[in-house]
Image (tube, rainbow, N blue to C red):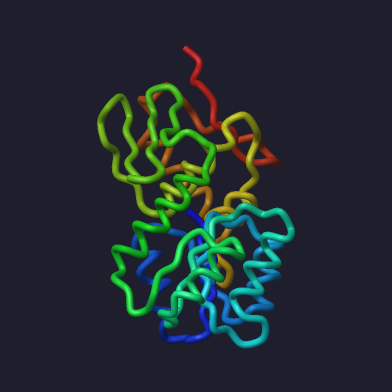
Length: 222
């Protein structure tokens, strides 16, 4: 799950980002309405957590612009305002949910997962050969047995399964699994893929290296 967090309070933004990353979410953080508007047009995001009281254009205007572009991206408004009119205005502009500060971290996480489930047309379970992934419980199984994956191994494998019909480059994997401001080398991707291969070897699928291009997840021969 890729979250865009828009919050001008730097301490609060850092705290929320840590909570979400602790639940294996990829989190991009911006601090004003203009940055949010640009990010929503230029990045592949699963859901946005959007504060209303932002410098520059406020959260209401960010939602209005998003919906005027025809985007159905789920948006959860996160704000200190507990006024009914503000909640109604936000929902009428196209926000999908509303959470008032202070909030309980488990509730924020649960609401975000629910928003993505409702908006995501893909099947909940990803399956190929003997390998099954449940993106919402983040459980991976080979022939019914749970396998242990690190957060980044999970993200790489999930991306490969979502794109199992085509070759995926190392850079595409990096762009899909990492938030802005973090770095990972192409060699690190090779390490993640190598570790994943050893864990799914008995599943009847393989991660094939297409030299000069990237990786292809496919059914194993024989």
